[in-house]
Image (cartoon, rainbow, N blue to C red; front, side, top):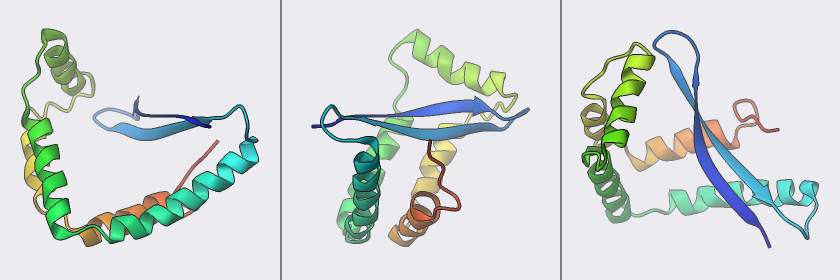
Amino acid sequence: GYVVSAYIMDFGAGRGSPVSTLCVSILSKTHSPPMIEERSKIFLANFLAELSGTSDEDLQKHKASLTTKLLEPPKRLSAEFAQWWGEIQYDDCQWERYEEIAAALEEVTLDDLVTYYKALVLDPETRRQL
């Protein structure tokens, strides 16, 4: 058995340039860390085939769902504050950020995703782990 958690961490890397990192933690009472690491690498390599096999219809559904989520207005004042404070904190002030991301998302192709996945997840030169 495994316990898996994933979350995004944001780091300020200077004025106007926040850096986001995807963190995945995997814990097990029954498997050693080297075994978990090896199985994780196998999963990530095998996921490339699943990603590559995504149909155009499924990709469009995922993009539409993500666009809906991006453009959904915050439901609570605290969420709206956090959204705008991030812009102010990093001195970025791109007030139309989510609309711009949603528009750019329409241009993303499956080939773009596969290339990105290979470069940032599978390539040991660009992937970092502790």
